[in-house]
Amino acid sequence: MNVLGIETSCDETSVAVVRDGKKILSCETISSLKFHKKYGGIIPEIASRMQLETITQISSVALKEAHIKLKDIDLVSVTSGPGLLGSLLIGISFAKALSFTLNIPLLGVDHVHSHVYANFLNSGKVQLPFVALVVSGGHTSLFFIEDFDKIKILGETQDDACGEAFDKVAKILQLGYPGGPHVEKLAKEGNPKQIKFHCSGTKNPLEFSFSGIKTAVLYISRDKNLKPSEKRDIAASFQEAVIDTLIQKSFLACKLKKVNRLVVGGGVVANSRLREKFFEAAKKENLNCYFPPKELCMDNAAMVAGFGYRLFKKGFVSGLDLNVGLN
Ligand code: KG4
Ligand code: ZN
Image (cartoon, rainbow, N blue to C red; front, side):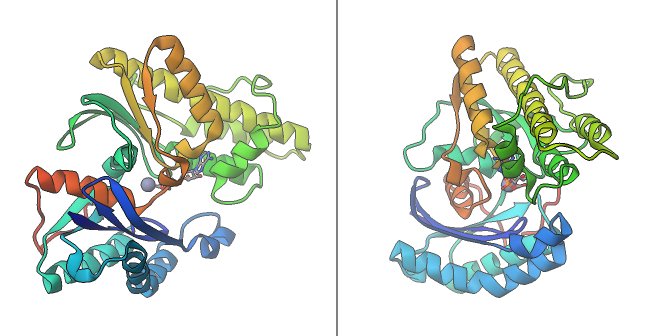
């Protein structure tokens, strides 16, 4: 079964063809990031205009790369939320038009859940049930996943998302946007033990809070002409504290749910130090930790196509009245 996946929840226009929920025949992604950089964040109007301009062409390229024709597509799976309203509407409207004209089923899927599915593409395999942690620019969530249609939220951030905190810290340190890769690069040469940062506590231990640590970075950096070595130590100490919190909470979730499988996904998971520390800690705790390949951590349509396939096989399908889910 060939599934066309469409992802337009933020700055990317991504279209993929995935066979039987596994094999990526193509995945074409274009980002409008360079047009947002000077504003230090995503401007929704710029993002959706770019998506409107590029989606038809990106789809043609994805089909060509996959060596298939439109008539060979069996299902259209599209991100229906959460994300930017205008951007999501471009993807959903395009998906509806394809579904209607080709007379094939349509399915709207959750973007955050799709990040978990990135672990199941190609040869990826994890036994159910498991705990999943998604850390992206918009979300930081822990789930208990009994099956792909039985996903229970255990905790999420109460304020900033983890990637958002990386982006804001990068802004404070006058690095580029998006901040994650810049902070990671700077942190490599810094001393993570130099400053004792920590993430604020939360009422439910499986919830997250990153706004306090971001403010702590602001206070320590404000009105100062930081030396390059000080910037490096701030980046390293911030990154270390955030990763330690992610590990502590997701391992606790595994313990509470009595599973030894932890699946991680989302843009922040492209961070090498994070991957290294998770693996180290997992080894000590006898826990199996799964990460998608780096190129599938960031927003992409392959995860949307794959996840859509799994849900479709379970009987899920959307109508042409599919709407945006903004949560
Ligand atoms: O999943 P994603 O592509 O988009 C959303 O769904 O939000 O994640 C983007 C986020 C940004 O906040 C970016 O700064 C962060 O992921 N990110 C990183 C790294 N690469 C991307 N954060 C930390 N370290 C990285 N290497
Ligand atoms: Zn995402």
